[in-house]
Length: 168
Image 1 (tube, helix red, strand yellow):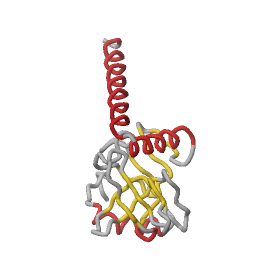
Image 2: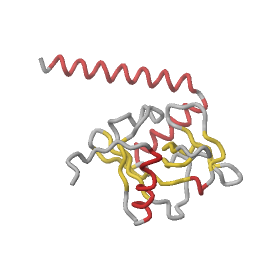
Image 3: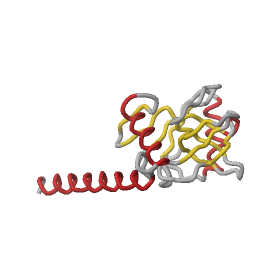
Image 4: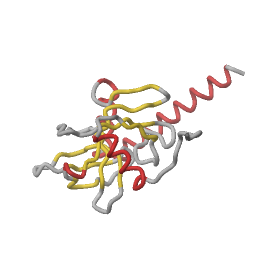
């Protein structure tokens, strides 16, 4: 029996196990690795919950796990649906899209994320509105989006510092 249930595997090692779980109808939770989904998802702090696609229709703003032509995996957001039915997919902190990703390259759909221990739906409500709005702003006006993000981080840091000072 494993004492530590926190294993560290490469995506290449992990995906066959994930695929088996998804195929059996189970959901899979993974900790976010990397910074491509900042500011919404943070490296080693937030998690995603994936489900099988099962023919699900995919929309702009949806989070998906996909396999690139080179065999690497990524979890990013649909930013465009092309006339041929393929998708352009981008990380929230990226400017360059993975283009012409076909449905058969999609591995899983992400309906929920876990931030600060709280489960949040990616399918509706303020969270989806904020993510999709940020994505559109960032793709059309990246300098403005990154300035807004920097200001929000500074405000958050100031509030956190003020709260820590109040507790002293």
